[in-house]
Structure formats: C-alpha cells, structure tokens
Length: 445
Image (cartoon, rainbow, N blue to C red; front, side, top):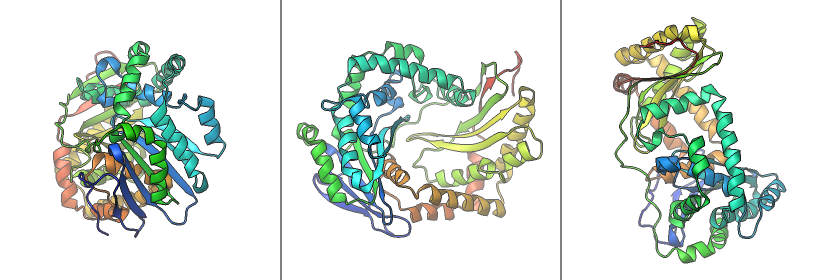
C-alpha cells in the first residue's frame, strides 16, 4: 500500500485519497474546506458505528504560566451551551441515541468526540460541530465549571500515582510549558476570567486550526457536506486561510536532571525514573518503543521479572515512552513500600545500565515485536481508535500511515537498532521523582 503525503498546497474544495483500502485499513480521504478546515475520514467495512471528532491544534503547552489550565477549562465550557442549544439539549440529544461522547485535553491538542450508530451520524456532526463553532461561553457556566475543575484537581491530587507524573514533568521540563499540569493549578483556575477564556476560544477555534476526523460506516462526501453546513458561518468569515501546519521542527525545550521529592502521607511511595527520549517523528521512535516493551512492557519484561517476580518489591512496575512534537521521554514507574525504595531503584538502574551496555537478544526482540503487533492491531480495531489515529497523523506528521505500514516499521527494527537506541537514551542524564512518605535527608542516588 502506498501512502500519499499530506499536501500543504491542496486546493480548497478538493478531495484527495490518502490511503486505499487494504490489509486492515479502510479508504482514507481528505477534503480542505474554505478557511482551511480539514475533514479526514476512514470508511470501514463491516461496522455499524461511526466515531466523529473535532480537534483543536492547541493544548496546555500553548498557554502562558498565568493562564495555565485555560485549554482544559474551555473544554468543559463547550458542553455548556451554544447559540441554539442549552447544556441539557446537548446531553439529551446525544444520550437519546446512546452516544459515547466526551472530550479531552492534552499538552498539544483538545478533542471533542461522539461515537454513534451509523444512522445517527448526522446528529453527532450537528451537535459536536455546534459546540465547537457556536459556544456562548456563558458567564454563569464559567463560575459553575470553575468549581467543578477545582474539584477535579482535588480528586487528582488524592491519587499520588497520578501526581508523580506531573511532579516529574514539572521538574524535568522546568521553565517550559510542557512542565505545567494540563488542569492548571488552584491559583490559575481561580484567577481565569471569562474574557481570557473567550479570547482563547476565538483565537484557537478557527477553521484553519481545527481538524474534523471520522471513522466507521460512512460516506466521505456526505460527511463533508454536513460539516460544511454546520460550519457555514465560520467558513464564510474565514477568508482564504490555509490549514495549520503540523507542529514539527521546533526547538526542543531544555531538560533538568536530578531528583525531586514530594512528601505525602500514603501507604506507598510512587517513583518515576526518566530521561529524555525522542520526538514522535524521530525514526528511532520504533526502536525505542520496542526497547520499552523489552524493559517494562509486560509480565515477561526485564523490570517486571526482576522487581516483582524475583524479588517481590512492587506490585506495579512498567516502562513506557511519551513523545511530543519536539521532544520525548523514556520513563519507568514503580509503586512500592517506602522501605523498598533504595532496593527498587538499585534494581531498576542496574537493568537500564545492563541494556545500555549490552543491548538486547534476539528472543527478547521477537517477543517484544509480537506483543506490540498484537496490541497495536487490537487497539486499532474500533472506530474511536481509527478516528484518533486520523487526528494524530494530521497533527503530527506529513502523511497518513496505514496499519500495515506501521507494523512493517516495527518488523524492520533489528537487535542492533534497539541496542543502539538503548546505548544512547539510557545513558542520558537521569531525573527521579518520588511522591510518598520518605525519611528526611534521603539522597536516592
């Protein structure tokens, strides 16, 4: 299967075929509407559902420190009423067809979606598009949702296994927007005004900064017509703007190694041991993903075997990667009893050093590839996953990859590739975040 590059110069009103059907991928087509609004769909055979989503190309890393949490705050408010629908109207319409609907904010995007039966797709397009294009950002709802978000922050703060992730990011990316929590802080949420949120809505939710994606039992041309009708006023006012370019090619933020400790009265200590990884367009991403599976991706992984199975030091231990447009992370998470911290860190560091010095063997490589292949295919069989995949390709790449092409890139990874990336990534300066009870004066070195 041959992919077609996403053409920055694609003419407004034209449609291109990006992927032909075959080997696990449906027909993928893309249309650019006036004002730069992109509509990308995948037609999937043999399903009765459609996932429809609209994504803004901005997330929490696009905020300044004073207004941290604004993107997530706006995500809440778009469910709270439009020029022609109340919050109850929105939820009643989607509940009435059994839709699975929600929204989420990440560091680099904000997405609103609904998964419905194929016959109810026109309703989903109308409602989600109305929310995104015509929100009133009601002043009363701003105050109501302010309280809801403060409760959400409090709920999150009660989960140290989640808190340690933000603690690590704040330390490692100190001074960068990537280090700020997506939800914002109690102080920034209390200080955010309706005017500031409305300003963000008007600047970020314009056609050129939006991506419409849909996957399932659908007809592309019909989806395009319905989206064009739902956004008609916005498209008429947008002029000849072009779609926003993928967020790639920027300078990565500086990183900050060392240790950060947050004392919590909890039964367990929660640890993240990490270092800089690779950005999502780096060709070494596939080898690093295989390495993370070998080290901490399953019950047969090195860290699981050494930390849990052989020594019984922890219940949860895993390694994983996180990639952004300009940088990335390789991390190991462990939750353990406080008096086990030193031993856990010693075992984890020993395994990482062993991988960096001696690489991986053929049996581990084959097992990791099989694990990734299975989870990759199973994780992309649903319409929600396919819709998200379309969006991520538009946001971060210059082309759409078929499922078979992705799998071929994993299959092409060699033991030498993994050993080389291990030698480079695992010897980079280390950062450690610890959240939980610990003795004062502990160095954790």
